[in-house]
Image 1 (cartoon, rainbow, N blue to C red):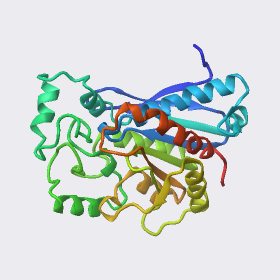
Image 2: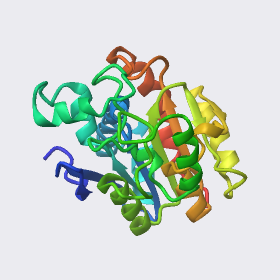
Image 3: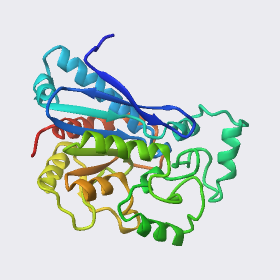
Image 4: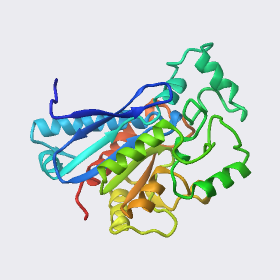
Length: 282
């Protein structure tokens, strides 16, 4: 193994039984938790986190800096936990790993009552539940908003489910967050080159100072989450439950799924965010 110091674990399983992997780098008391691909057609966020794992590990091995900080200093002070793909079933559908004509493919297509491009328009898990509308932070408000917008049953996007945390993927993310009790979280999505940093009027200590720093190193602007999307997300729940800094990072620009030709620019924009978020702001 090239990097034996990377610790790997499984935090749960998807609807179809795929492992939800988590990787850990570092031994410090400060804990941060990053995740990507809650949404299937935002899969490009997964290789962004995987490349960061590779580059951080190489920098640590060679006692070099990553971005502008010594990787060994980060490793000693912070434990970085990364769940690179929250929604593997949905990602497999969008990326073509699920064969047209298979039962899984046809079941999903039958749920496409919104008549979105299929499978490229699919955001939900394979049961048709939007995983980033599953968290107990204004979930009832999110349900009311989404129902009024026509998202009334399992489908490709924006269906909140029957109750919070009914889906194994969102439940696993909530449980690992409770277990780790991190000081900060990043949730990776696409698109817009925006950092969403608040939930309602909650203002966790240092959250504004941190988002200004993350904006500075990435060039992404920071904004409040739009009202129609402002509840039941992972970041919302983390802020509400822990009163600690949590951020949704919307990478890239254009229509999802973003083309892979944006990957290099997205990574350049985000290496600073991923590094600066490891600092201990407590």
